[in-house]
Length: 119
Image 1: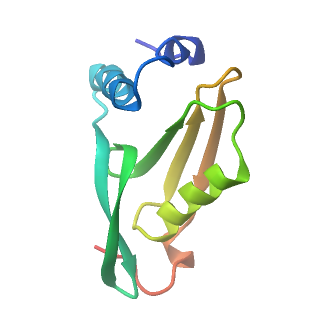
Image 2 (image 1 turned 90 degrees about the horizontal axis):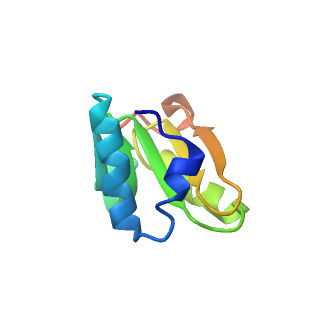
């Protein structure tokens, strides 16, 4: 089953948690493992300094942040960029299922992060 913006947008009225479960179900049908509200440790100078919960994490290598707003803002990009900077995950997707669906892909290579990559 292919996920289209229109199909995903039909879930707009649902809670984010319900949306995450639906998104995970579609990916499970395609043998892609996704975790909803996945806890991710945040590192600074090789020490865990906190934890956040990503909307979705796919295959432990992509952070997916889900939005249902009129337009993506710089604050949404900054939020995802901070998640990428503080973790060993290098790729993030920002998906907006507002009136006009939007998709942004952000990459922040571990080589650019201060210190060695966390385990």
